[in-house]
Image 1 (cartoon, rainbow, N blue to C red):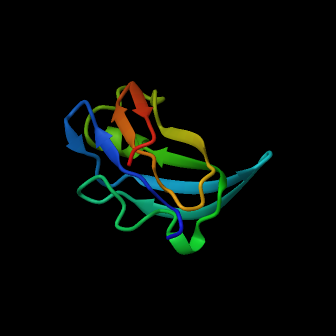
Image 2: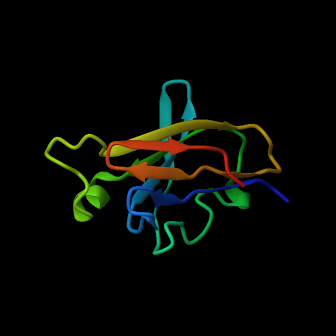
Length: 118
């Protein structure tokens, strides 16, 4: 089985999955970023399919960009403009061509965290 990449977003301030967040995936090479996928989280805070499925998987450096500003505004968490968090980039490497990489985002209006999940 080839590797693949999944993600999801949890709103830790409200204790719910974060629905409707746009996510873009970029392949990074030196100073070059090339967008290879874009999706939106569903009602479970997940994408409907892997953001990088096995047939497109390659090892290397990637960046997920979570466009959280509209979500935080819609849920009355954003505060005054300019937003403290609008876009959250997470750069990471994938070195195992057979692995499932899961990169979740735990979100609140003024902070976030991530980890390599399973």
